[in-house]
Length: 391
Image (cartoon, rainbow, N blue to C red; front, side, top):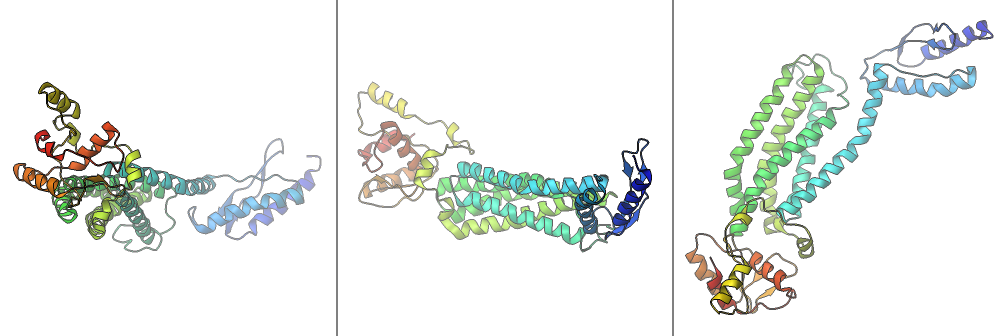
């Protein structure tokens, strides 16, 4: 203020420094405020606001702050819509790893609780990651490299929207997990009844497959309608989500997940015994609502009839898994199953012939063990009374 002529010379020097920077197309001369405290210069880059060169220019101008202060004593600031978009893009990109990690880890533990397995939720979240990578790759191929841009009505190519990955992750994750639960809940239900992994996969695909296909086609139709909009932002969102839904439903859920489940066999349903004991049980198939006699009611009936049993089991129609012959009836610490002796195996075969479905003895014996606090290696006795306690 004390030296207006020197101030103007310094401003002209700053103006020249900015004009000489790479990727600068036009710089307006400095315009002073009324109190001479501020000077405004408008910088127009050579390329659009989403171009990589524009992003580099913004960083160069911010780095110039120290030089201007050291040489001329000026404090420089940079603003504008392009700068706001670049800052927002940076913040969103920094948040994506944490955002994706949280939802993937949370989904893994929830699916592990529901399906009582390690591999099933692992395949589910890895399938989602594959769908996400394929979706972002396809969108980049079209929006940046111009692949099939004429088909989608894209006139110019450039950078993708900063918030597109975040929106894609959120929506695609929700749909992918829906399709996963549709398919695997039916396979899990059938497997709990029969113990046959291959047969359960066939039943699951046959009964849940049409539901997944119909749901995916509905969502594809909704998202693909956005592709015909003039706005590039809406067009890119619709294209990314439409491709992601189709890829996840038809490639991942209908092909890869059943194939991997068949490949791993019964190992797909493996859950360590210690983990099985501590995680809660969730009955998504509704079998807990089936009517059957509880242990308490059976004991009450036994007292009323003056009959005393050494062992009372709670048994209900579900299915048998990993049943094999053995000399003893005992608990296995490393598998979700029981091993039956010859006498119990014969009894099981007799009951199975009289029932429309098999008997899932593991949960029955587990309930009995928990009720009476049996040691994991303690032998279960008086198996002959099993037949009298079956509804």
